[in-house]
Length: 172
Image (cartoon, rainbow, N blue to C red; front, top):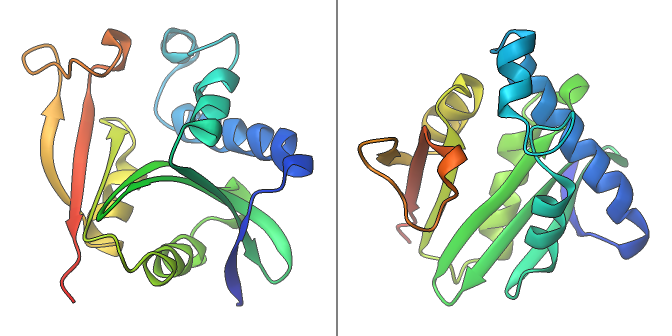
């Protein structure tokens, strides 16, 4: 399978947002019952709000990519790079395309395209066992912190308690 990254085009931004929301909703639906799921929504019917995605896309220093596999749009990545530090803001693969090695191949492309980054960081919710497995066991990230009621991140909204912070140091 040929996997590559393309800079997100403005004409594709709306579909990118919809695909991102569908992927995040799918992940949460695997974990929460209906009532719990509604409590997790950032906006009506969505685990991740449109505003969160748009802000990530347009934040200073951000680069948004479409993940393309065999000429099909199958996911997306939003990075924020500042010198030799990189933040993985958003990473998703469309649910019907998961477990095919697309995420790993896309991440290899990220590291190839951004050799200047020596330290990558990201966060994911405690309930996203698939993401935790993916970051730790497939991509080589390490869990470095757990945000919760006893260890709050002052930069993170309170409703996002229960987040793991991951770090990957690139050794070249």
